[in-house]
Image 1 (cartoon, rainbow, N blue to C red):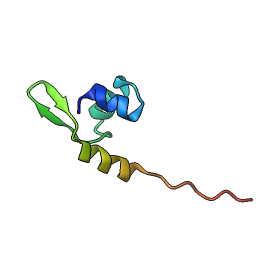
Image 2 (cartoon, rainbow, N blue to C red; image 1 turned 120 degrees about the vertical axis):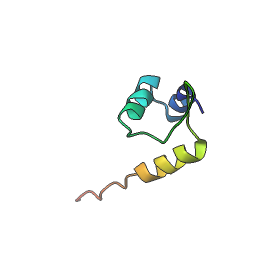
Image 3 (spheres, rainbow, N blue to C red; image 1 turned 90 degrees about the vertical axis):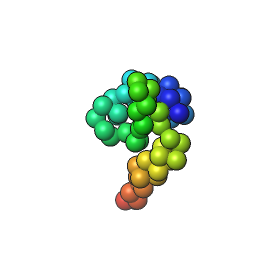
Length: 59
């Protein structure tokens, strides 16, 4: 999956995906020459690991 495809999938800008990659805070990526690709399984793992459970509110 390309950077643009990942950005579309996550509904974020391509610049956001690039920032994640540069800071190594986004999903794992593969560099093949000058092309950067994301494996769908790696993206799903990254999303699962990034899932936050909201705290209960005090009512």
